[in-house]
Image (cartoon, rainbow, N blue to C red; front, side):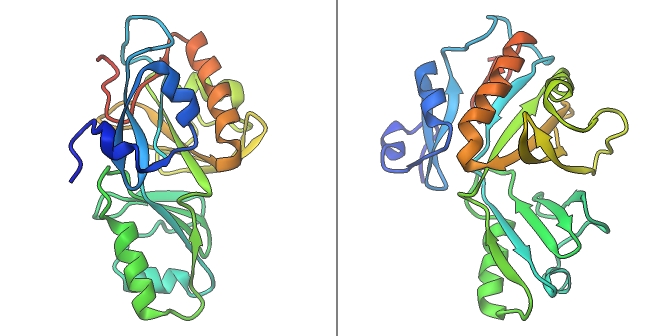
Length: 235
């Protein structure tokens, strides 16, 4: 098992889509799920004082995610014991802690927020291969979608400047917006950690660098910045 901040193990793993933006910030790397993950940032690009207001950006593209869709998907996921949102454009947490996002009547995105490699995504892929369910098929998401976290009490201010829809007070805690952020198609949901306001933004990997640069510019203008996946905002 890799120890935290294991530089040597990281040398042999896949670079995440935002590696070239994070490396110049004196980043320390950890190998998780085959990715070089930015665990901690030392060359912080914003103010020296970090606080809970943020907004703080993290790349979560190393965390496991998979999609399932097709006419038999809902019934198959129910049979697998997965907790599902009742309607499209809603999300919930499964008993495992994974995010289950319902993008359509028979279209789901499963996202393991934990840093470990084992989780609901692995369980469902193995079950799907065993069951060979009729009408339900896998949609690869791990390398096709980048995931960026926007955390802190000022996270909403970032999206207010860039998002095509209002994701403020009227945007429920379980709501999903399939919208445009900085003119890019994106999936957005509210999912902060430890009581801190936050959002998870999924965008096509080919647009990840551009999206990150735009988000960083706005975060810096609001006295926020960039942190690593394993880093406290007040490190």
